Length: 136
Image (cartoon, rainbow, N blue to C red):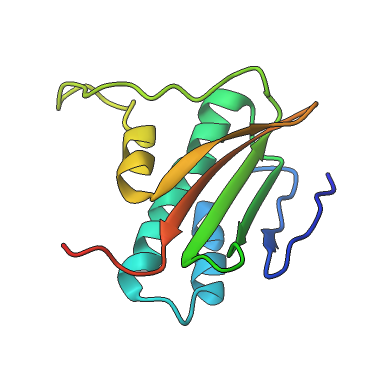
């Protein structure tokens, strides 16, 4: 799949076979070397959740990208999947002992914005994270 490359855009090499989350997180860390450690940790968690949701609910990952929109202090993470008709569903709070169903709640909590963009044969789920760490 070919996408229009934006300045500063990095695309993780997605190959056939199992998607390895640890190499993806290492790839992110290598590209976010000048970013505060808390932001890098949150970006790793956001990326993991976006990719996991694409595999679990949308048939896999076609592409994973990271870039910084011009003039904005955010990093944008994007995951393309092959099911444009299947929208992410943000569910409400779940009982503590009930497994799963919290991925998009984490995305919403950690990101400054998130959403979905549609194309003909895929959709892109994206999240932006501020480069300025939030007070904890």
